Length: 551
Image 1: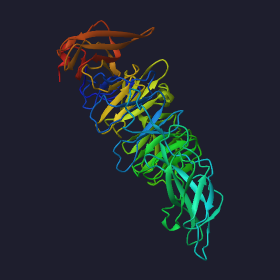
Image 2: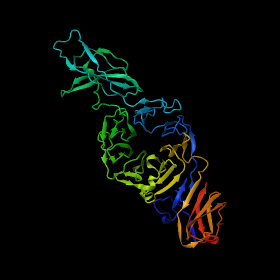
Image 3: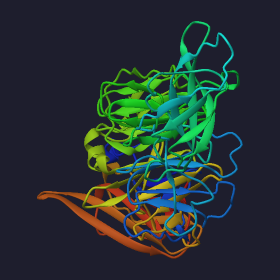
Image 4: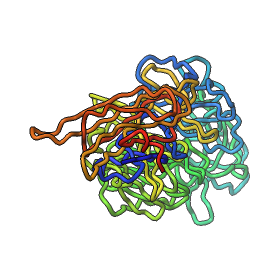
């Protein structure tokens, strides 16, 4: 009898241990199998301290053009979504974020890194409309030309930020009659709103009548935000551009799930609504579409947007904010963990009660882990506790059952799906796609680079269960590794009259030569485990020492 394993593959818990294919494993801990050998991951390397005290639930590396692992780490104690703004000619890396329990916010390089509690400062996203109507009186021009006709006018005003962001207008004033060269006295205007706003100006608009007889508000004057009165002559022939057709209203205060669409606009959620900003104007959110179920989160794949809810899943293929329309997909797979939603290999994956679900570009919805795990096995990891990220074409998923916590590493390649585990638990993660690196917030509260240290993690691999035709003694073994020692364990099950008896043998392997095992038993069922900190390329077990090297 001789069994030699030279090409190791991952775990297939769905399949009974004795039915696993050759090379498959019952358990793989802290090891990668991408090249067939069993290679330990290196321990995460600490790269930065995080100032805030508490469990970090979101991290983000600001300063995308800086190749420095230690700078600059935004971090939050609440679930937070972060997106770089689509701002033409932005030189300050304007960055937007939605933190649970807080209104949407924006920061940039001028204020984000002034202390360790990054982001150090911010502004509230969006420009509110003034709440006070202005009052206008007219001082008629002296000696008006004969036959002068004054037109009925309205006045409205808006707030404007130091970044040139303009909010919606307030309610228009009462009508007044005026003509060019009359003086308008504007009073009762509102000062800038209290709060985390960046408002420095007001813009005043006067209504004129266009060729169709419609009143249109056009730009008249710009005044300091604190001005509550203003007086000046008016020239209706010099009025500027009209207010936008759709008011650039701020996003709702409970917006979450913020994402940047490649079409130049931003997407977020509130309740059962999918909100969108104006193109290249992330401060104005005039568009929204309802769905039937409470939204959990979403992700963008290519030009399409996937919306995950507590019920059905939706897909919107449109690439502009006006026409974007979420359509319900077939296959009821509710999302149970917002932080598991990630774009991955032409699709979007998320955790459902049945397993990890993928939505493909054609709108297909399927449980991609059904080949690896049963629903019961998946539920044992408590999917509601999970959060995930994508790195190196694999999906990393961390869980906390209350009794145990760790991570699952899934290769979801069709026809070659694989699952391994790690006992490294992260509370948050950040995948740096530009540099192809994965960073973790560990329970120590700091940022670490995955697989970035000098020392390897302790790895373990449990083989499939081998069932022999007749009871035999497994008398010898061999482990070929890059370095030693390696701990080898053999577990055999003896069929006895009183029931099965487990026998476990352990050997500390010091080199690549075959070694003997205890020979005072016979069994039909056995499996073996190897533990070490160096790459293992081959494990052989046999009935005799001579059979180990026999071909």
